[in-house]
Length: 616
Image (cartoon, rainbow, N blue to C red; front, side):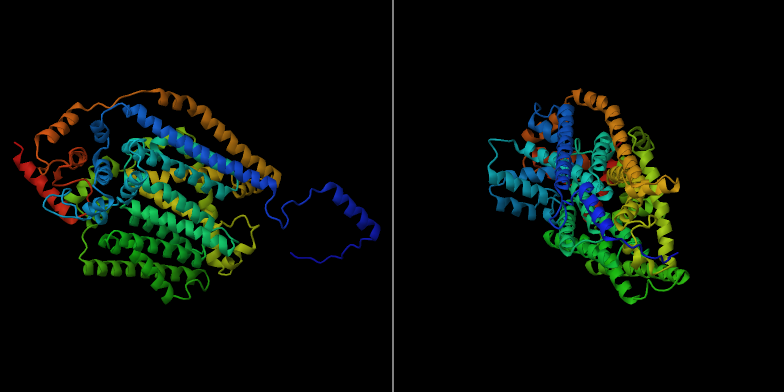
């Protein structure tokens, strides 16, 4: 309740004494109009240095594990190549092919008109597969003439290990942006390192597309976190959007599953927009970046129809059309708004399905139908066929094992994450109810920052992101790496959050700014020390273990093929083995592990049927 009271008069002597007292006791405002204070600059320098240092430590850690596990520096070249199992060997073979081409131009031409990857077919590798990164590395290696200084395989694997520095630094910065302190960034990086089994598999599946893409996906999420902060200047918004665009483009260019990951992200943005947690204009800007990135990748991949017929582009177009048709979506009171939202969601889903079906009919697109068969079979909507079984029978595409949660609990990650996500979901639910009940609340949200029950836009995005990708990880084990790394960010943010600790202390009637700061710093430091104390002996022991690559049968097979068969000989076999045959011998294949092609899937199915009847 607002009251009016009489203003106290201050005489000249009191004013003079008060001003002199202030001048003596108060600290000068160094920041003022001249920019950040020296202390702030020092904090930024220290925080950035720690981000870089922890990233380099991670790169060194995974590189050491790789060397110790295989004795990579001492084994033969053919053994090094065999160590790139399944599709990893297929991708690395194009890097090797570019290096040994007579010229860079000839190497690119051979990729565009490739007739060795699939027998009796000439395919465009740059269109079918995401191998621009291999082309770029080969071009850099040849341009710098590194033959005398560094073996090609080391240039390749060190680049992948180096990207772990980018990955960890992005997670660190993301947590720092959310919490406002780089202590949470340190904790996020530590959790990523000690949970290596569940956060990355780069040390034993180096050329996999996800190892190229996920570091840039983390950069994109950090850019989105900054972009969604309130009160940004125009130049800061444009710079953050530029970071989001560049990272989204590189992410999309390096992984064939880009459209599906970005679709889940766009669904999170759509839900937050509908619930009035993120401004519509910012959500639309992110939609446009996603669409522009995919279209640009489509052009670079020679107008790949799988991208043009993606659900993501259909969904974005459907959302834009639906928003134009429903101008008054966020007007009215609670019941009307809920009804409008239900209608809006139904319209968007119908438009998405209609647009996608029409595009696929026009383009005669069947390249991605196996993925939808896999999803339908996974959810029990459809009987399993050959395409679905090829995925479901593989361990990485099964449900997330329960022992994963045991490992995450052992690292003190799961418990803070569950508590933080549960607390934030409650805060978000209160905010959503308040927004839907009072439409004017969303307009005043940025004006009333002292209302602790309101969730910031960047935090709301991370909650929805974590929920959706958590569901994806639980349903498909291979996708857990999209979730577990984000768990590190969200849990570390929660432990160092002024908002969360402030709300808890207010509920306990213990809140003061000093006490809130003490709790958040103490919690971050204590958990960080506990993690280091618990896992330092394990990491030391892990690094000290020495093993050696040993697969004499496969080595003998590759040597026999190289010396006893003509160069144009065609080989059939399992998809996993044939990728190694192409890499080690350069022979022609009948099929391979890159499965995003209808003709190749039919050929693989026919080969399996014939093999079944030929086996006695």
